[in-house]
Structure formats: structure tokens, C-alpha cells
Image (cartoon, rainbow, N blue to C red):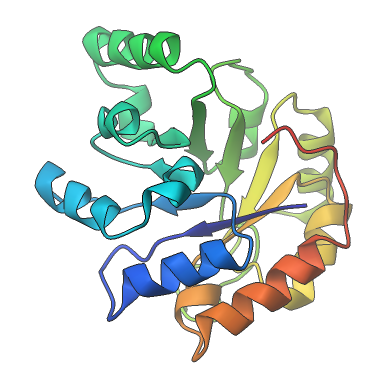
Length: 211
């Protein structure tokens, strides 16, 4: 299964150093999600990471930086998807200039998996499992509904929310193409070691990768 890591929304101590270590350990898809960052702060973050790893980074905002820094891709929020025709043209323009640019988005309902848009290389669906760190972040999905939806969908669907070592196999059995990790990594006392464990477990379950 694909192993994806999302950045914490609020910066933490030595964050970019940890991210670089995760890259060194084999992380190939890092979602940089800093909704409150200005364009300059986003540039500063990227410049702290060696350029050799830039092609593993997907940004959630200031999408034009994807071209300047030769990033792996861009992520569109639900707000982005509903944005103006001009923004849509900008995304199409980016794809023309960078044909291998990956584009992802996020869904929170099963019904969204039914209408396919070939713009997206993969989609996040959340929350899949109950969060161990947020009491009000509970999955509202039934296992049989998820299994049916992921197997029926034409999307590569990534499980997000409450995914940890113990339920990676369950996510695979439900038909998920990959797992995305957020608090599981960043709330750990040793994010690097935690990532190694998660990546090793995901690697036990093989899909044909396209990324």
C-alpha cells in the first residue's frame, strides 16, 4: 500500500529536520498542509528541505510554487474544487507545463467516490477510523459500505483518519489503495521510528503503484 504522510497544520520544533529524515527513510509522498502560511512562509519551508526531495512534496496551498520548486504535486481542498473558473484554468495550465504533476483531493462522504474525475491521481477519504487523539473525530462509516465503495470506485482511494499500525491490514482488506498518516506520526515520541514501522507494515500489502 502507498504510504503518505501529512504535515501538522501547526509547525512543531525541528519539523523540517524530521521531514528530511522521513525522506531519507523512503517517504515518497509528503503532503505539505499549512493553511495559514503565506506564500513567503511556504517558500521558506520548502527551501529548508534539500531540493533532491522536492519531487516528493505535494502542496495544499500556493499551488504555483509547484512549478518553481519542481514539486511532486498539488492537493485541492473542497473549497478549491468549488473555486472560480480562473483557478480551474490555472490548474490546467500547471498540468500542461508539468504533465507528470500529481493532483489529489479530499472527500468526506462515500457518495463523492461515485462521480469520477480523471484530474485526480488519488483521493483521501476520511475519517476512516476513530481518532485516538481527538475525542470528537470519530468515523461515521460502516465497514461493509467502505469496502463496497472503494471496490466500486474508479479512484485510487487513500484512508485518512485514525490509521495506525493495528488497522493498516483492515484498510487494505476494505480496498484502500494507500494509507495517510498525520497525528500517528507527529504525536509519536520518535516520528522517524514510527514511520519505519508504518511503512514496513504498508509494504506487506502490495498494489501496483502508479506514483
